[in-house]
Image (tube, rainbow, N blue to C red; front, side):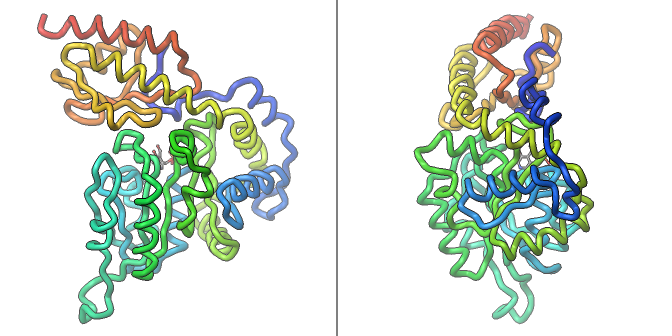
Length: 346
Ligand SMILES: Cc1ncc(COP(=O)(O)O)c(C=O)c1O
């Protein structure tokens, strides 16, 4: 595809990143002596104001390890109803951790503190009818919410009430740095109330593989066992960690360009007949587009001239900007959308 707007996961490592991977000093990370992995873990933990980090192969594994480390089988976790953890991780919370899930409806993927509070239930006081809610999971940015960001006050409120109810807090921060870029806050400030945070290096940051799970020293020591048990212990993974370090050095500051391009894309698309965009939801690098004609027809017709995107609903398309999409490609894709629009109703 010439213009691939399916996801920010489609980026390929640039020559500089490949060179960093080639030159990486490696060891055996299962034995804890890969210096590049250690450096990456320390770097991400420091960036997020946490004590320690753990390099894992994917965001899905990172969330799964976090849920397993925080909970006991039979516990309940709380998450937004369109969260990645619930929709797209194979039911790992049930299969790997033996947890049930209480789903909370959000607005553009963002939860109201009161709604979270209502769903927290405990075995004690219920004559053992209820499971024990022990973990609240949030997602920032929210993918299905449109790439939307949590306001800091809401995060603080949810963290406060969850702690009062004796629940741990995990943040799926697959795109946390997009939220940081879109706000005035530091990463450490945004994650302050959380017990663990997962960040992905393979999305907007452009690394080929990898996520880092961070938390307290004792949490990461316990998480280490579950990473091994889930098959995520890797050997000379410094080659991959080097790509992550390169991404942190080179690709953090430029996320704002992806956001600017997403806004331009949204504005251009909204002017095209048969399409509509909720501009309020366009806060980072995603554009969710409502279509009058079936989304699948749009996606198929766009593919012919080389514009790739995903249909995420009957009349819903998602477009994602990333480090291999430039201004020219945004204008070109708008041109293609305009042309395709004129073919509907023919
Ligand atoms: C919000 C969110 N969390 C977690 C993940 C999982 O990441 P991975 O694809 O590395 O397993 C994704 C992937 O797109 C995501 O969007």
